[in-house]
Length: 204
Length: 66
Image (cartoon, rainbow over all chains, first blue to last red; front, top):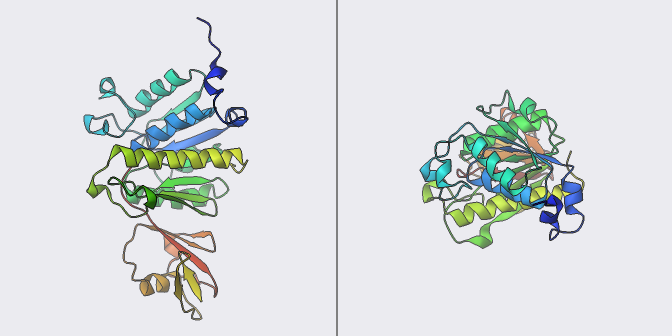
């Protein structure tokens, strides 16, 4: 069967695939936020993703992360790459399988048009924001903060400060438990913000 | 006058630093990201960076979970 990949995108907003295919986004973390963000960006028509994580898929991830039973034990980057290529075999995916640190993040993600923070620990979010500011203050950064619990949809917001964007309620803590709906909403708020920034031509 | 998170107002004093604002706002939580007039302030400058009068200060709470 001969298929035209571009047909995937004919229901997307007119003009968006044409612009997004020329864009490259970085995603730090392939968990509840990162895996859902990556899938949405590929469906939106992004041209290239750099995805980073050194963890393997565990059963306890399947409540909110975009993986399947057969992925358990695989590297998250490998499993996610397979899933993304099953949606669009022409999307370019670069995987990074190492622990991200303040020392390596600037170089590993150099060349992206936009960066996405998708860690789970607040401490990691903090150093990423700090490090990104010193290495790439000209490249927009979209963070997730406050995704726990269920309901309270109206408390989820996106705040822009300069080139930094924060999606979430800025208060709920994972100790409350992580409900798939709320994590996926915030992931898609981040993806939506990425798309909006790139469509406005405000990426790097 | 200083505005914090587009909501709270603080009286400005000459020589006011970022740390003074955190103290006045009773912030003791360390997982935050701070901006003065949309400019990011690294944590190592909280003690030294002066906050000009009429500044808009934004303090974002970085919550665990993802």
